[in-house]
Amino acid sequence: MSRVRIATYDIHECIGRDGRVDPHRTAAVLIELDADVIALQELRSHDGALRTLDLLADRTGMFVVQGPTMLKAGASFGNALLSKTNPLESRGIDLSVTGREPRGALDVRLQLAGRRVRVIATHLGLRPAERRTQVRELLAHLAPDPGEVLALTGDLNEWFLWGRPLRWLHEVFTETPSPATYPSSRPLFALDRFWVQPRSLLTALAVHRSATARIASDHLPLVATLEL
Image (cartoon, rainbow, N blue to C red):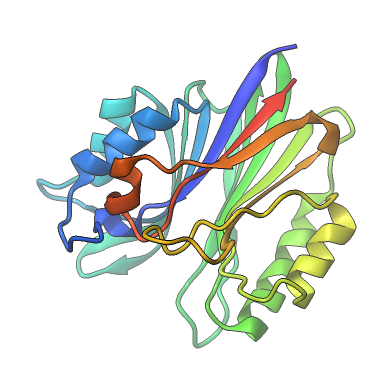
């Protein structure tokens, strides 16, 4: 078997707890993770001198899949996925709800350790009704292929442990641990989540708590280890 690491990290526009915008510090955290795949949320990247996604890709040496959901103060804003291997295919899933901030998911297929792996990475909305709509939309896109590994990850913003979105997801995925990742200074809430089918492939799920990670964003990264 081969070990594969998949991480999810809400980078909070590279704004640290000290109020500084520092993409280099964010890149340092990504390098610490040493993951094969990293799902990013709240990525803000200007078209001018500060091209954050290019900087993160250059520093990590990873391939990039972009998933912007809107323009914010003259910059693209949304999701991205970094991978050590060139993705086989990718598409965006629109999860926007009328009257709310645009949201989406990235649906990416990769070849990892000789297995075909599908990673769906997302960032859901802040209101309960919004998340219910978005999870129903996500579930409609799953349709797992028996021959591939399916992983769902990202910042779900789900504060309610017994809320309907998590119950619906657990009907499809076997429940996995949910360590707290937010706020990074003293994690109390499991906003960042990871599920996988088959569940037996997941051997570890841990929060990355380095000194740099604790200050680089308001979330801590979550890292899953799979044995494929």
